[in-house]
Image (cartoon, rainbow, N blue to C red; front, side):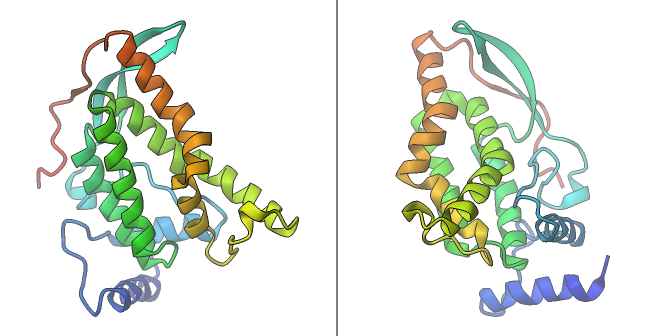
Length: 220
């Protein structure tokens, strides 16, 4: 790792926080900072896999997993083991480390990151038994859908289309994350990827409740 780059990332966070370092529970490790910065700098999405991106980095040391019910078509559901945080509280702990890193590399503002956290929390409260569905949708939103939105926004900004007027190629993820949370984003993504499947699952009687594995997130 380039020590000067890591130092500059940490300086950036202190500038944004009034000279205060992040709390240990949300501090990103050097490896997390560097990997996210390299990913974004090389054209990748602003994304981390929360199955392995956890507070305290290597001190957690194992992939998070949980069991849940997911749709397989024809109104049927099956139990699957999903790699990732088992509930919203665990997800939030991972996301806050991600937020620290995103702010440090100047890829996302504190306000947009906070709005994303509350957006996911509200969805989790809307359908409490459907965490498995929500986690998969949220992971895909950051990892796959965000890349599609970024590509379309860059193209449509040049074409003069109104929806992409605020897109800034120097801060693309600000626009992308905000748009995915907008009413248009809700209609085009969250309705399809989360709300409708959650309603169908609930209407089918709810085939069980997502079960967390015995692994605890913050055993450190």
